[in-house]
Image (cartoon, rainbow, N blue to C red; front, side):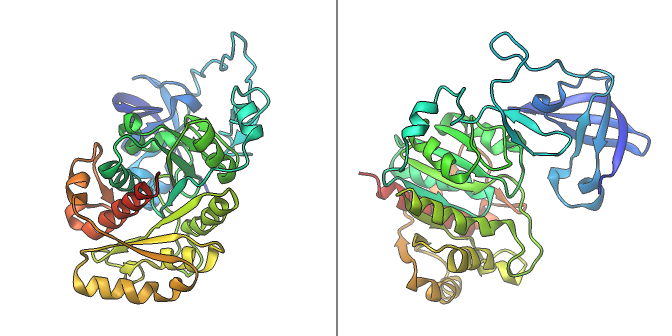
Length: 360
């Protein structure tokens, strides 16, 4: 279950919004660790820390980090709210875990946004782009802003990957380019907290004032290599939520000719399953022009059965390569950069361009 280590902080390395990277000395040698000050306080050199090293030891991701669970000798003070020590919110995320966080939900009684959220029942035709992986977020945003640089774009983060939004250096780098982030489900750490994708979409539209919203899980991805065993099935549920709330769903397809796994080549089986089997409502599934001929044929063959439910939309890509190269954050998916998996990022940017075209 949990592999524990005790260590001493040697140095604080880089930091970004909500996170600190540390060098920690343990009996087994030095480790690179990550701490979330909002959960555990702010570690300093010389502090003793308790670490969860399970995923690191097993090579299961988490960015190559051990995760700080607590500073046992220097606990942080209780959070202050309006000069007191009682949290104004009662939305619990990472529920029933030792590090469950109590937060103010955007639609709670104590929220300043409660009246707006109580009155909201529709997202008013807002285009919403859905994506399987967090790595698509900056590429979709680049595609939107390539044609509509003034468009206000929000990000609704689901809980299929990282739960703390603070883990994402991408989000930190996009702060000046997004209207805000809404963390939903068990995810937390966004500008706004919501309990469901539905309330997250309503908050993006009516509280953040978004013209377009992007829905994707946080960094990381759970997958077992089976037909249904991957966190990206939530894409289909997001399509359904968008339809129920009167939005316009735009599906970003996971397309690649660089992934070494057969199930992810052409159109990933994640996209085919989520859009083809889980989504009950229709969406615009965006296919970028300009794909290499063999890849284009594979994509067309994979998407043909989805055409009965969804609208297959071909989008020109002139100018999108430049927009991707000017992206304010590095582009990377599964360790592959832009030129190593160009089709993946181009498909995401094309979805963003199509969403921008739907704005009046």
